[in-house]
Image (spheres, rainbow, N blue to C red):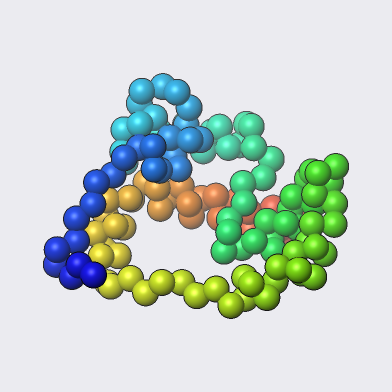
Length: 129
């Protein structure tokens, strides 16, 4: 295992989320582009009734069942009866602070987009109550 002081990585737009939601414009592949971030957010609002978050999987299922019942009716019940134990046992890997700091700096807009999607999902769950 490499030490945190030797941490190096290469960012490829194909490995990131913003380009997937941004579109085919070449500006969508510019890493940490504010334009690509805003375009991705606009596309989510326009074209995606739900964008799930794995760590909030149960909330994702609740919103999917409500917004797209023709595809997801009963999904939460199936999850709770068959997959819940697998998710409950999952542990996040430990990431050294220096590595986390380098990744946070390199992926600033990706993290911004992730937090925005997660907040959107939370708002959708709250609207169901």
